[in-house]
Length: 55
Image (cartoon, rainbow, N blue to C red; front, side, top):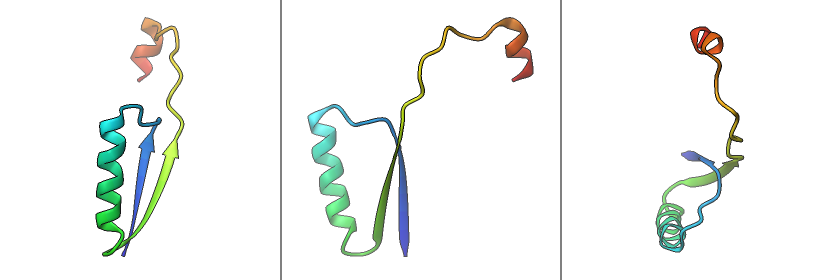
């Protein structure tokens, strides 16, 4: 079995990085793991009322 994790942005907190490392090390003995890091969305000025109606 192969599991793909799609992660948005980078992990910045040290305790989260340690937790991810422990979690993925435990899983790698049972399944194939693929981690795909997606770029974080850029902030925009916001939606106009007309654009909000479209969504």
